[in-house]
Image (cartoon, rainbow, N blue to C red; front, side):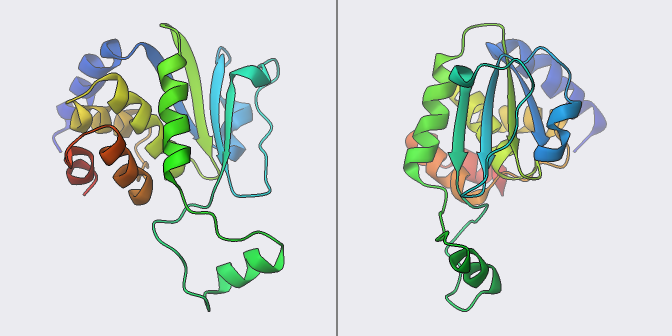
Length: 179
């Protein structure tokens, strides 16, 4: 990608979105700039992140599922560990993606939304991209470039992207852009 492409995406795409997005990992939440009024918090089952002081829980979408693209094999060590602790494997599902889309649809113009997951790389970037793609139909690849501009280490969760592509009627554009 050419260096100007990222700047161009930020210049062109940001004004198209009715809301501002910040993407981060759980440990970065305390370091984010104040002013976020809403949040999408995605954690592993059984975990809950502490959000910035003053953010109303009414404005927070909390989801719990694992950062997986497909089911783990029965003998996978992580699977055995999660099951030992009483948590079955929870894959990203249509209900999660529908909740993300509905949350994004309900954001008022000018809203500043914090989207985070454990590391701020996969689930959060997928959720932010899903909200952006839903707000700008037909511009899915541009929205991904914008997400990569604001969070260069982003690698959107493949399963979330596949479900969103279908639900948003993107006709494979999100899947192709994700690669």
